[in-house]
Image (cartoon, rainbow, N blue to C red):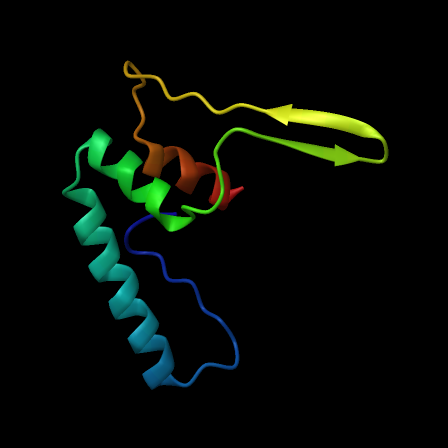
Length: 87
């Protein structure tokens, strides 16, 4: 999504849409000023009760999920998450 694109959600009043858009813009500005390390710490605070590494059993099969972050990545975690959300 480009900076000049808007997401339109039906059922919102103009005032509700403006409120949500203001929050989105404030968060985008705040996050854009963070370093990679600060972004990682921020993402971890969004769901502190959940570990990034976990096991889950589905229909008798146990799946183990491990998460690793690269210090040499060309993308920030925020950019990676946005790419996932845009799909």
